[in-house]
Image (tube, rainbow, N blue to C red; front, top):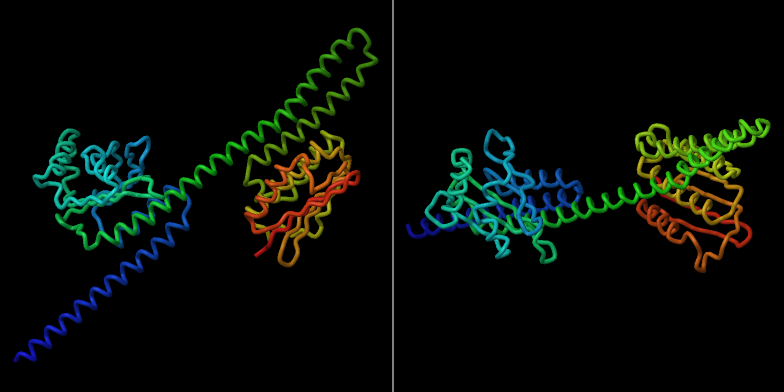
Amino acid sequence: MDSIQSLREEIAERKRVQEELEQRNKELSALLVISRSVNSTLQLRPLLNLILDKLKSAVGYTGAGIFMVQDGKPKLFEFRGQLDGERINYSPHPLEQCGVIDEVMITLEPVIVDDMQSDTEQARSFQAVLAEHGLTKQFDYIRSFIGLPLMVRERLTGVLCLVHQQPGFFTYQNLGLAVAIASQAAVGIENAQTYLRAQSYAALEERQRLARELHDSVSQALYGIALGARTARELLDRDPKRLVDPLNYVLQLAEAGLTEMRSLIFELRPESLEREGLIALLRKQAEAMRVRHRMVVEFDVERCDENRLTVEQKMALHRIAQEALHNIIKHAKANKVIIAVETQKQSIVLTITDNGVGFDPKGNFPGHLGLQSMNERAEELFGTTTLESTPGVGTTVKVTVPLY
């Protein structure tokens, strides 16, 4: 009899261990999926939704919120509630005011409340906030609560909150998984915010570049047109026979300004690059260069198959070409430029050659920051940039980007 009982206990223990192992494997698998998903998403809003979706399946909750710390205060960015699956758009959220999030932010430790309707100080604070805003009925499903600090390099960036309609749902047994997920989420959110700041900086740089282009080209062309028109008006009464030169000057500047404005408008519409192509944009830039600076611009693009290029590759090559042409205008004192684009078996090659004054590539030379920018754009596509220049002969910039 004792041996049978012992066997039953052994079987029960094996079953318990097996279930525990299966639960741990499930948790590790969920954590791996979350880690991969979080680190592959750089857009903040989709990332926050992704985190909440994965938490739902891995840990379980009735409601969840992600609060970001701004100026030392928590601000609700995403929240999921119980009300027919709809997001509750309420700001400020009552959790912000009841003190539990402040406790997480001060202690930098997880905070668990077994029952938000109990007689504890935390629960009473929460109930008072709900009553003050008339939300007691709307949020009466919130019973158990867990708050987790989102930390990146020992710096608090936000708080992740989970609530459940069942009292005591969150325990220290499943706390480990929640903390691990919060750590992954914090890194992902930091990456997304860094990416957002980089995008904002890039947008600002682009606006400044366009402002410079407008000042250096179109606004100067308009100033020249006004000056030429004023001269023509003065000659109209005094010496009409001399009107030809100022009128030709006005027409030339108007043509140059129109060409450059079309080029800038083309750049402001990324869909145009996808629809009309890289070569079309390069031709527009070259035409503006020809009219404005009276340069000879030759094209060698017969061996270019644009269908093999992604939009990102086209955009990067366009920016690189733009920087190279800008350097030629500013520094080279050239009167001829050759632009060649060729798609090879495993790469695309952009080559821009001028017959300008050249320089010593090993020394200090003007336009070096532009070359750095070209290098960085090529490296983003796993490509390379080479530069060859001889004083008195000219310069060649060659960019090679792999195709997949």
